[in-house]
Length: 79
Image 1 (cartoon, helix red, strand yellow):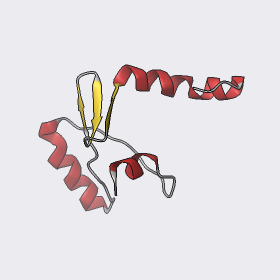
Image 2 (cartoon, one colour; image 1 turned 90 degrees about the vertical axis):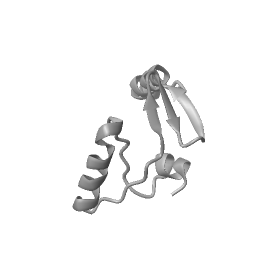
Image 3 (cartoon, helix red, strand yellow; image 1 turned 120 degrees about the horizontal axis):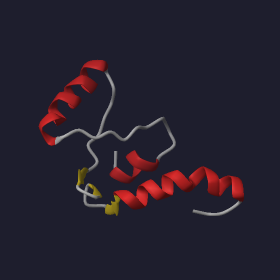
Image 4 (cartoon, helix red, strand yellow; image 1 turned 180 degrees about the vertical axis):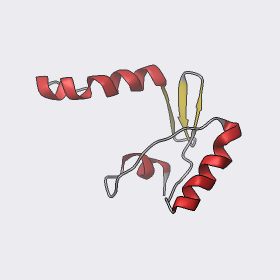
């Protein structure tokens, strides 16, 4: 999957998870063992998320958008 498709496609349920670099291979092995398809789409570094060279966004900005999404919808605002 292209990184943007992995993030935003609505063709199936998706989850974004993170692991410390030293634990990434353990997480990948667990997903493989459970039969879950997965794609590495980026890394988190400090206060920025970088998605496979496609784009970067601040963690605080993502948090604010996420936390305001439902209130904005209920109030008829765009986020």
